Image 1 (cartoon, rainbow, N blue to C red):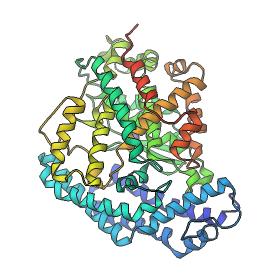
Image 2: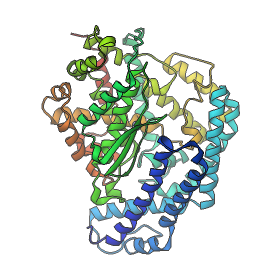
Image 3: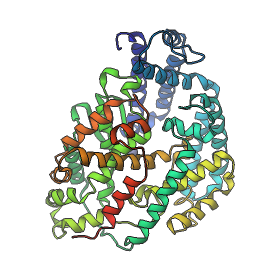
Image 4: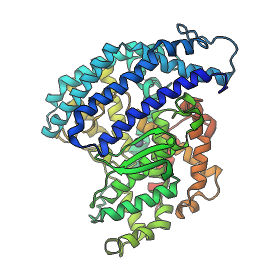
Length: 504
Ligand code: ZN
């Protein structure tokens, strides 16, 4: 198949290489770039984006693709196998997304969101939503317009709402008619668990040297199978993962002497994302078969490492001593079980990124309902702060008038990312379901975790998830790997087992 599609694959690879150069510029901007370089860097990045877009939409690519696909209808030309059909339909969908958005729209949207991000920062600092409101209203309006351009690219076709089109950008094939009942079930289950968990525990304020935290983080990455000859970790204000090729995957973390678990969790979280990228098949680089399947599947990889694996009893029972040896003055008198409880403290709070794994998805469900209502037109942007507070009171039982801790806390909407939040919760659900399968497929998983011997888990993920690329949709993958369709039950059962069973 690679020989047959050689010309197409070469073109895609070149686009992948160019995009990688663009990502390298962004990585540098977030890590080491001197601040004075910002203007020239913006020009460089805009030029790279233009070059990539021109490759996708140019005549050369059109000619190569039209040897296999009718560009108007998407019908395959000649004899193609099922696998080849899958490959071509994914390439065709990517190409359509690039050509359907007029470049005037792309540049207008990008200049709106860059202004909106700037204003959002000011509004958040001042805790005044009214400053951001007109920009958010424009982002919502332009997102509807964007959905209108892209509606023919929705996987599965048929009747779709504008919000479905936006969802499809991040989680192909998922509709809100599917998400709403799934999230509702999840919400009922979480509220029931929350009623039974002790949410009054306080956590100690340990002071832990950041260089030693870094050392512990580098150790866990190596144990996870992160390959430092094909990647590196650095520091940045907001932790992220970026990749230029499976042979070059970068992650960042953020360390704080008073918040050990923030840094450690983010190292492991980004490490999980990075393993996915390092696990993609380099032979298919730049093509759909060498790319991550969806944001939700990506998030399942980071979340499983962060929650199921390193926040488990097994891990801290086996590895707490290693941490204790690095911080003897702080943790000398603490037991592994006390530490485990500190790490897994549950408490409803305002800030999504600080939320524990029991309440986290409620933050997402709130955002899902609000952004969907804004895109559907049933919630006016001006009414958002009020609706936000009402939902926090109803879902989490807390309320605050402080808008910087409320409706202004996340960057996503200012970047034009509507339809993105649900992928976080989907990631948690996928993670629990995949992890259940790992426990059935691998002998004594908790023994392996307590010894930090992760290679059987990493190999399982590589074979069953990473190497698949975009050969199937997320729902097909869940069915193939676990034998069942996605549901909230494995996740809820995981929470019940962890939080509602008394300590022995
Ligand atoms: Zn993530």
